[in-house]
Image (cartoon, rainbow, N blue to C red; front, side, top):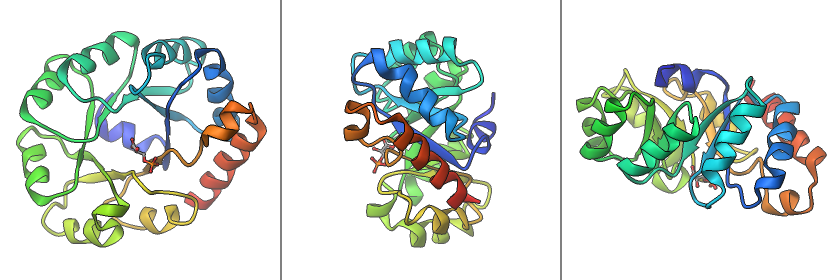
Length: 207
Ligand code: 3PG
């Protein structure tokens, strides 16, 4: 799979942090029931790699990727766990080379023109715009359109039900990502129907 295909699977990529492996399938099923087709599981907890493996095995129709990848070693761990793509908050040369070497589609985070130029040096044209809201949001993305017309973005960081529509109308935005679909409280209380409803509402708003 190519990074562009990853960004075009769905208008919405939930960013999930797994604290309890036992409920990871319930969570993924609640999202899938709401129409979600792709998940980013952040490597912020010790359960993350196992969760990527488990959900990939149990739910083959869902595309599972790894997020919060901070170094080359984590890229390899993600690939070995079965991640179909990797998302990172930022980019550097070591990292970009490693992603290419292990053939894992990388969607690195950028916020500035200089970072975009570094990404293009490595032929990376499918990028996360992170942290979106605190980096100028819609206005910054509009400014990137003319000089970086070949680039598509997945803005994350501060995205929610109230602003997804506005981001998705931009020509250089393929999809949006974020944690608003999986509030911690709802996961702890196993309120799966509520999570399904947030997913449905988000996808309806993304049309
Ligand atoms: C990410 O890792 O992409 C962001 O932390 C998601 O940001 P959010 O929590 O504001 O949605």
